[in-house]
Every structure is written in structure tokens, then in C-alpha cells.
Image 1 (tube, rainbow, N blue to C red):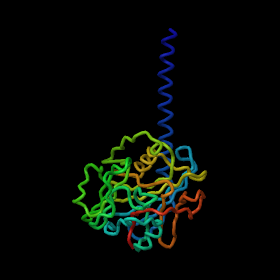
Image 2 (cartoon, one colour):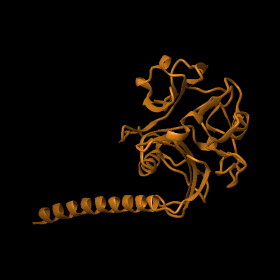
Image 3 (cartoon, rainbow, N blue to C red):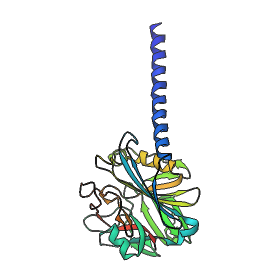
Image 4 (tube, rainbow, N blue to C red):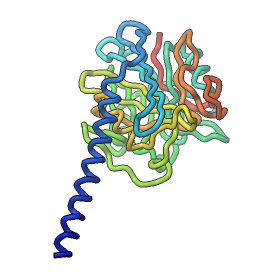
Length: 277
């Protein structure tokens, strides 16, 4: 009898744990999906959305999204970067005559340059011998198409513009299984790029490392992107690199490299994704 009661209690505990998790997950998804975003149209087909959350994944969060209608603006989506120099995202953007930009892939902080493949307009900017441990996906611009592919499925010679980064978060509507590591499991500022089923490109920044914005682990980032309608998504360089620049506004997120919750903590980076004016 005692064994029977213990078994019943164990089952109830599991069910309670599952229902609590489901409730929390559902609460967060509803909080996100029904958010009243601050929205500004930068031009037709390009929206800038900002959301400040007081309780998302039991934390404060600040999220910015550039939403680009690829049916209208696909030709204006570009990659920018330098083989050796490290330049703040905002400066890269001004040099490229960009309306908006986010930071791109991983880079060598001492010597400059991307640590993974970067190809722009048919020219190899950086071509390391192998991708860095978390870089398993490709963001591709070619023949007026935008793609996100696993790096192993990407044919380098086939595409004119390639940025390797990662990890791949969502592919063909399926959330990727992420390796457990401090990089994946700890909360940090994050930058991500995603494609949606209704032909939108999402460029997202999530602020972090501050009491006003804690940041996401990669599983939380993947959830947010799914709730945003992403069918394919990959993580870009985050941490102190996370930056969103808007023309005539400057840096609009809260880069963490200066450890202050302001717009001044921008870190020099090796490359960007931008929207041309």
C-alpha cells in the first residue's frame, strides 16, 4: 500500500512539474505574442519594432527587431565587412550608406577579420580552414534570394554572399538540438537572423548583462524566434558585439561592452548585415 501511494505521488509530481512548465511556457508565449510593440516604419517594407518586457522568462528583457518584407526589399539586404579591420557596426553602416544594420558573425578580437567564411559580392573576405565550434549555419544572399542553411549543405561556389555563423537555431520549422555549454546555456546579449513563412527577414537584437535586460540563453532565443514566426533562424555574434543601428537614430539598443545601460557601449566588429537606403 505504501509503495502504491509513493508511486501515485511520484506520478502526480511529474504531472505537476510538466503542467507548471507548460503554464510558464504558455504564459511567456502569450506575453510575447500579444506585446504592444513600439513600431516605426523606416520605409515601405521595413519595420523597426522595440519591446521592453518586465517579466519574460522570469526576467526583464529588451528586444529590437528589423522586419524586412523580402517581396519588396530583397535587393537592399546586404553584407558588409573588412578582412582585417574591426569597425563599430554604426560606422560600417554609414560607410555602406545603410538605413539600418546589425552586427554579424564571429571575429578575431586581436587580429581582426571573421573567424568563419565571409564572402561578399563573389569575393572571399575571410576563409578560415574550418568553422569555429558554434558556427554550423550559413546566411546566404544570392540571385535575389535569402537562405539559411546548415553549413554542411552549403555549396560555397554556388553563392555570391555568404556569412557563416551559428549555431543553427531553427531549420525548416524544426528547433535544433543545442549542445549544452556555457555559450548556449548562460544568458547573454544575442543577435540573430531569421526567415518567416510569409517572406519576411527578421534581424533581431536582445540586450543583456544588465538588471534592466538580462539577455537570453540560446533555447530562449529559439523560442522567441519561433513565436515571431521563424521557419529558419541562426545565431550571430552576441555579447558585447550585439548592436542595432538605425539611420538618424544611431545605435538604438543597449550594447553591453561598456557595462552601462546606454547606447554608447558599441564594440568594433568585423562584419554586418544591413539594409541599403
